Length: 107
Image (tube, rainbow, N blue to C red; front, side):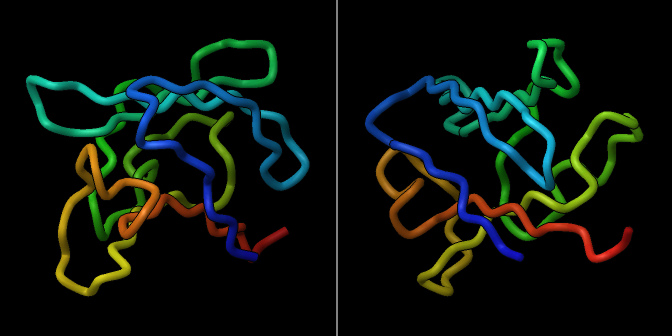
């Protein structure tokens, strides 16, 4: 199953809880001016940081480089719906550039 992660690009820092494959997580998504980029932190249901400072860039498994046992089993990725491979900006994130979570297919 594919889940679009709800983001609001009018909020330069947003935090919310989300259930992914039956497990509760807290996501913090925020804009860093000096980098001109959006980032994500992911915490467990108790607020313990699992991974932090993950740059939200196109065309990669955003958490694929992490070996933390507590990360969700699926895959987070960014997708540009315009087909121009435009990275997320202050104005297009959540509009034409979207953050998705794809559930794992394994047990």
